[in-house]
Image (cartoon, rainbow, N blue to C red; front, side):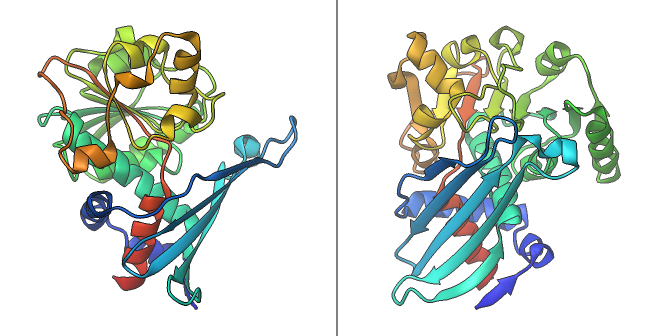
Length: 308
């Protein structure tokens, strides 16, 4: 069994290759059973474990295990750890162990950019990023593959993390700055991405400028929120998979209150890739994309790492 450490995994997944590979996998499809979600921790030390299998007709099956520990920031540790095992689908033999953290963070950013390719205004040059962690720090680089992003405003609950990312982005050719005023930063942006572990809405729909695109990554349980109800109800809503309607508090809470109907969803990421649904109806319309992640993306990334 081949073992791909973090650096080798990262180098095998440049966004210039990963984004098209994800689009191809969404077009051709694979089998992705519902993920298992287990609450392992305690109220004092919460820990959620996800088990995500997938297999396709290209001869591979993969299983990702993800551990999410929101309190890790206080211990100077990432909030997420994951492992990925790739198998021969015909024999069941494990063929590769791939760094799950790199796969998760890079495929998440790539999927976000893939959606933005269809939903954001093609002229989008200003990005506001909420969350400067492992996934958030990759978003500007992924978006730059599909949009002419030049300026980036960064907000994080930890100002040190914001400043650290801003310094790196400026070194890499962006015009970046740290921000504290979320309303101003959201209103300023052509595209807004949230990659946080927030349980309270951070973005209000009233702040969105006409024609902007809101991307919601972080809310993957019913108790988590990154946007208020107005943001998801009053704008053109898209999701990565149908699971988002059951997993994310950004959708489940407005649905339970009666403010949002599942029928309001215009399409999934698969629908967008297959051109089965409309995108934005005008340059003034705001679009919202809510993702909870799918094992399809992990499998596509792992195969790219293993086969090159």
